[in-house]
Amino acid sequence: MCRLTFYLGEPICMADLVTRPSNSLINQSTHARERPEPLNGDGFGVAWYPEFRTEPTLFKSKTPAWSNANLHELAEVAHSTCILAHIRASTSGKFDVSEANCHPFRSGRFSFMHNGDVRGFSRIRRALLASLSDEAFAVIRGTTDTEHLFALAVDYLAQQSGESSCEMLANALEHTLKRVHELVAEHAAGTHLYLNLVLADGRHAAACRYSTDPNYIDSLYYNVGGKFQCVDGRCMMSPDRGDSRSVLISSEPLDADPSWQAVERNGFLMIDADRNLKQRQVRV
Image (cartoon, rainbow, N blue to C red; front, top):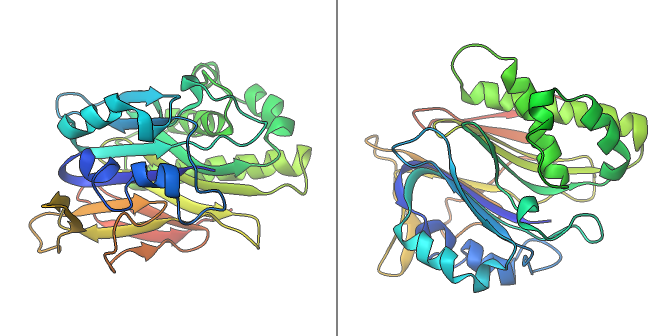
């Protein structure tokens, strides 16, 4: 299991997500509050969309986030309207600790990250790979279930026409969930899916909080307002007064602000280009 944070809104300094809040991802890398194991030390990654390009920029490392000086330096100077940040806890005995296996992942303008686990992944992997197009197959560089899920979404998106939208991204995630359900039913019946997913294109985003286990689901929260920022050691989401709007999605609240809300079980969040937040249930 892992921890993640996503932001889409007014331009923000990466440090306001990664290092400065009281429960920043750096803090969650050693003291995660809402997962059984508090350590997330098997690498990290950040993806952000610079204003001068449509594709995301990536910085990843297999070192723990808490000890990587380059991450701290980068976070102080990188600004963006769309940021994905992830700290990794490798599923024991399944996936190597390597830079190739660190999230987020990207393909063209799309970026993707995951908190959770496909328990029957080793039994569905061959069939999943066989079902991919050559283009989606080439997306996969590592061995994680996450990157294979992303390839399924990329295959779906390649078949769509017209402009990207948050609905299209949500449909890509829903297609991915349905395909994994089919593969698990055929090759790994009885195993569970734990899939908190985030898919973005720099202007729109979709996320889901999903589990087939009636006894456990990974935490996921959202916060909507004017802009999230840290001033004089205090981090908070400013009120939405109509002139700006920002949305935060995170495995755990980054601060004590009471406006954080839990995403519904098996629910979708969709953020459009005007940063309006829409919600619906996953239809699988």
